[in-house]
Length: 310
Image 1 (cartoon, rainbow, N blue to C red):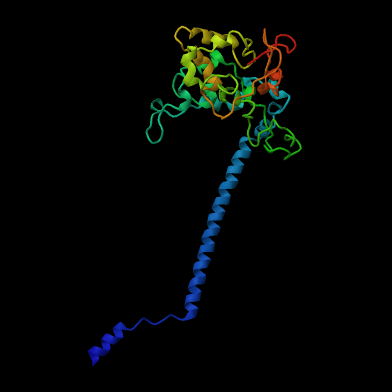
Image 2: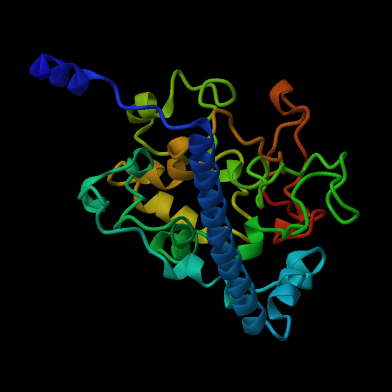
């Protein structure tokens, strides 16, 4: 009986603690969590204050604020800004280069992008700004400057009508939250080639180029002969590059690279119909709404003399 009663006692559940004990435990746990959160908040606040203080000390003279609202970021000063003035604060755009290999170990030299399919894209992988400003091709065929693409921006808000100094709601040349308007800048050299729609070719240029000896000058020696007369291109160098490739049937590579070979967009750029010697009278339907000359800020010749074409 003693043994049996002892076994029954061992199997009995432990006594339940009073309710007030459990309530006190919960309260102490909550208190501990509040204290821990407060300590963490104090630490985080201290770090924020220290960071703000470091920034204040580093900019005691207000250099950052003055640079942000520099007249160079606004019209009309942006039009006359030099690359040296821009790169004084933005020099990282030319100093930074792509990785030799990705974190996964893929080497840049072994990874060829779709826009490298034309022979004019040579050399190792390079950054966006370096490819447009300082690579051999950029220096030879192009004459791009910082303000060719960048026309400044309002640091308060890059949205139309958001402030007294921002672009108005009626400004169709403004692109929401972009520091460059791709429709008027990037599309110039990265649009599609209207091979069939406008040029009347039997197919896309990669498919029909052999029919034309891979040479654009075979046709463009007679029309649209005033080309690339804008300040962001080296017109003579482009013509020389196209002529140099005629013998090896690679002349069109210099042309096609910027006229459909590296399209970032599905549409073609609506180039202005600047007059050329022997230009036929009348305007084709596809060119009815096109301007009669390139943008004034890019022109290298007066509009009323020999208008430029690009």
